[in-house]
Image 1 (cartoon, rainbow, N blue to C red):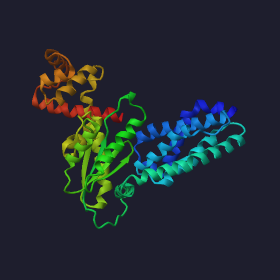
Image 2: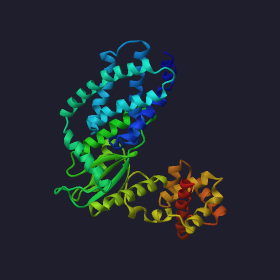
Image 3: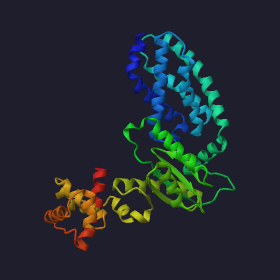
Image 4: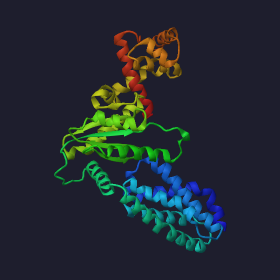
Length: 372
């Protein structure tokens, strides 16, 4: 069919549009991390769509072996805490996206699309329910929806809930490009599975990261360390205290700001609170003072190696040996570069007063470039 020939090369584009539509119209999908939506789910949607096009082109029904993976992928959403109606709704929504893009005569393709959905959806539902029976699914879904309600500021009437929480946001370490589309899904799933066993800790995902609500009595640093252990290396995370349920949305917003600031300033991966980045947080607010500090380093813009030298020197606590090692250069080379910085900017990074000024200027400079 001409329609099949036209749609096959666009399978990736159409699959991305399918998942975007589902995320927009089915709230449960917005509780999945952005990396999972853009990776695993798009890859799954593409494979299912290509299978459908193949069966149309060859004028046949899909075989049991061909349906095994799509059915398994649907069942996996039970592990992610998605309700069955959300899992099934993706199929008609995806079909609607494909339908809108079909060129020419749609009649034959539409009939085959309905047949295909009739083959897949009942089997996905059956596999999903089997998977759910093997999980503590109701409690998992309840905890995820409870976290989402608290973060949205919706009233929650549960006597057993503590009044205060530490809100922790985190980003998982970047995965190698060779990891494949499922790697992020598997890692997020492993993190949630580990933390589900922590008393009182609520776990959900928003955007491209995870959100934890940690109750009193649970050490925030220890919970963050569990995430690090699951990932195999440290994550960048930020925490903010909410004294009441009504404070949770504001605490979440503050933690998100702290996390973004730590990453924008290339701080090493660990758990941060506002007190750890108080000066940087203040400098991040737009003001004439911040602009004036950023301009201190403007003369170095054409000398990125000098910017890198200053950043490494500040990050090392003004230790020349550590900074030179971090830059993989000789200590004397670092000394020469610091001298060049003094000559160009008029500030000596080895003098305490100038060093503090240059450290603040470095922060303002980095923030200005991130916002620029």
